[in-house]
Length: 248
Image (tube, rainbow, N blue to C red; front, side):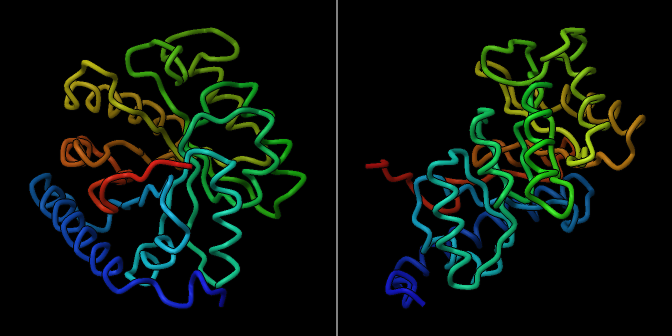
């Protein structure tokens, strides 16, 4: 074990344990309020800008799923964590450029931000070349139909960013497995309005693709609302890990 992992600072471990207890309690309470089983909701610890030692500490506390949004940070962090024998399920959750897909498919277990057909095609080719099993993907949807902020557009027939063409492309890709949808509540929208819209889109997708049952929605500030509207994955950063450090 390298020096950086020989001992996670006891004070940091205590901070993480306290944050994790609070978030787990929030998720359990939200599931109870929604009449859902707690096991239906997976918490993803969003560790962007936090050190690899935090990932190791969280894994020791029982966290199984970790999210990152920049390949240039995530790839070396995943290698550091793997080098000490820790194997969380890695979720890539940020806007992904096609020139990064060959790197991402080597460590990511799920890519949550597939929002255009050209990206899906590049991921498919990279996954077929580098992996022995399909890569799970979520289709990121634009709740307000504004593709400028990322997300496939529901109801659009655009061959690259329309949600329908994207669903068809991913469903037909041998290197990918269509797992569901992801969205971020648009600025200026009440979370309940956004997640209600996402729930309707997810139900329509499941009608044609029953295996695509995952819905990634909700972050530190709105996870309860997301769970109320059917989220199966919530992405939690600051509520779990504290104020985000600045990248040097």
